[in-house]
Image 1 (cartoon, rainbow over the protein chains, first blue to last red):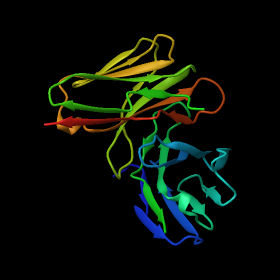
Image 2: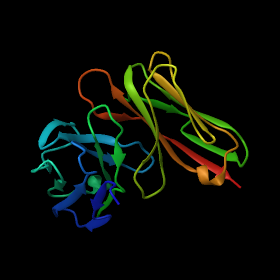
Image 3: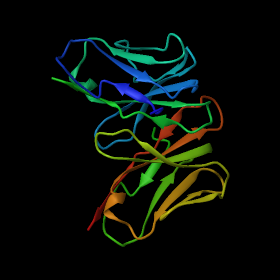
Image 4: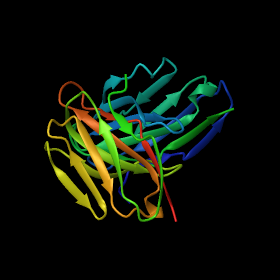
Length: 113
Length: 112
């Protein structure tokens, strides 16, 4: 399968813990996006990469959030000192370039208890 | 500020009925995608429209991009229970960043 892959699919963590999610984009896609989606809402943009460069970060991405794409392939999204409000589905997508179709992974469902 | 508004937000219809979902904005988009999402899964791309006035068909689904590339519609003919899901439109703006901006979503339920 050459689709976008996200791990883990589900994560339950205690408030205050750090969590890290991984996204493997479609091979040769140079753009990678992170979105957050809460129940019943459309995805909200968090950040995106062009190869290894992080080109934009949303105001939703507080100092507790950091994303990396060190070699321009897979990406990680880390949330430090998690809060209950961080509970959401975290979606990753990739596209060949900025104006091409974006394909999404299955998401990582985070629950902070 | 929500750049893309979808209507209706919720729709519950009987199998066999037709429906139309709208995606509206005051902004111009270089392209617009429609996705369907099921609970606990990521959005699945249905179609991309690029040219103003463009119409694309995918079996019983018809997608149209407005002439001014500010709005789009999705029409489903003879809806089936398998069409149930969250329908999302997402636009790419013509200037500035190329991130995808999502609409508010339309939750469709088709009853057998």
